[in-house]
Amino acid sequence: MIGYVTMGMAVAPMVGPAIGGALDAAFGWQASFWFLFAMGAVVMALTWADQGETAPRRPGGFAQQFRDSPELFRSPRFWGYAGTLGLASGAFFAYLGGGPYVGDQVFGLDPATFGIYFGAPAVGYMLGNFFSGRYSVRFGVNWMVLVGSIICAAGITLNLMLFALGLGNPLTFFGLMSLMGLGNGLVIPNATAGALSVRPHLAGTASGLSGALMIGLGAALSAVAGVVLNLGLGAVPLLALMALSAYGAIVTIILVIRRERKLGV
Image (cartoon, rainbow, N blue to C red; front, top):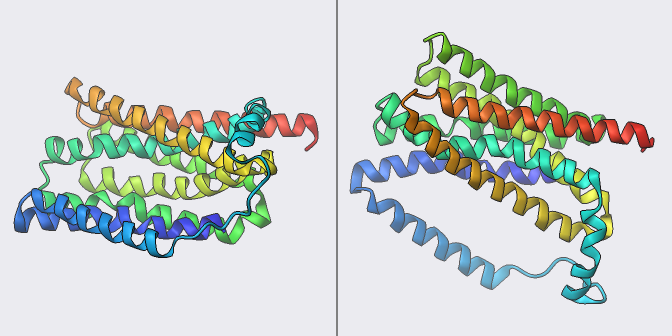
């Protein structure tokens, strides 16, 4: 179910950069911020008018949630899933931080063209979400996360090899990012489901903590991407950072699988 729901989340990063590039070309860079303001106002109005609470109340409230948190913090499996989630998505966040630099400074793309190229990972992400919704129950969360992490790392590694051989171009750079998106489409919903399943009665805490770790690590890698790109080596430092993050995701999910086999769960 998470896989199917997150398919909708892929639409915005797929069409957003193209819309922003068109707005910039037609009305200047300020137009994107006015568009963001309008969309934010629509979301706020919908939330205010229609968004009700869906979770039943638990005894103890917010304070009880804090008292229960140490039980989740002591779970290696939770940290394994959360770490995989953060590292796999971290490659994507690094791309968000460094991709515009590569498009502008390395390839010299205009905003409208870059907006079209930039949405390539979202196409793969939507496809990965579909596969998650279709096959996760059949093959299991761990297998889907492992396969997704390998696909993500493989796409980035191939991209890095092409640049190392002097064969990198906009089509290869952005096109292979769709493999990263495909991998994330398999990893994110399944790793999220895995993190929530460790302590089902603490699913809300697990969701918040794993989500915070994903966004926090992603923000850090996005900032690091901006730093390494200033080394003057083109797209190679960005791809190397993304590959390091993706391979880290493979390591963490393998540790989860090995622990589960050891415990017989």
